[in-house]
Amino acid sequence: MKKYALVIDSTVYLLDEEVKKYDLTRVSLNIIDKEESFKELDVDVEFVYSRLDNGHVLTTSQPSPGEFLATYEELFSKGYEKIFVVCLSDQISGTYQSATLARNMLEAPKNVYVFNSGLAAFGNEMIALRVIEMIDAKKDFDVIIDRINKLISQSNLIFTLESLTSLLRSGRLTKAKALIGTVLRVKPLIQMIGGKLDLFKSERTHKKVISEIIKRMKETTEGYEHIYARILEHNTEQALFLKAAIENAFDNIKITYTDSLGPIFCLHLGKKGYGVSWCAE
Image (cartoon, rainbow, N blue to C red; front, side, top):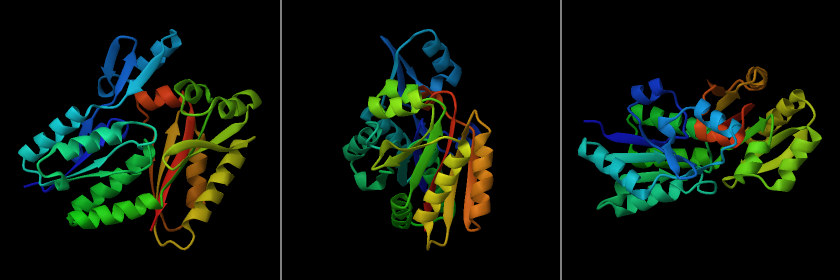
């Protein structure tokens, strides 16, 4: 009998092969175009870019509590005893609230734990991979919860984009901050703080962007024994230089690398960017 299950939302962009290999269950967010609604899992990145290029205004919405509830009930019917959920930060999406409401509808809500990661996309992929490792190692439910929450408390996420237009359009950044990067043509550094996106600095070159990221990583991991990182490459080779710089700066780090970014985050972030999420213990 499979004891523990992991549910992720559709913005945790692990590869289809990984989803199958680790027997993960995905709950889809939605992309809305006027009166039409599409499951993120049913469309691709080109669908988003094509509609945006043709002047469509796209928005997104979280899964309903009913969708999470149906997922939980199906997993329990298959013999799973406990369920973990990794999903978008509650500060940028209602997905966490939907997952939690569904949990509270169950007869035994204590059998489902929804992590409030404060992260998104490749940051949540990093957390999901740690959960998978612990499930595979047959760690106890409460042990997994305790360790993952400690890792979340030590988690960071920083990225840069070619353009801030998409973040401005989606309301994820204030107009004033978005215009700084767009008008001045600098490289914006965006971090997740308290689960929200914050443009905290701008640099003139990619070299300086990478230097600032390394500096932040050193400041937040000093004294820790193990570091875990997930690097995102979104249509730019600069991520390879970031990876090399991280490997050169740390000898106690485990790095995973992804060039996968799905429709909803391509809608919000645009066509080019790179970044890293990391945690330490």
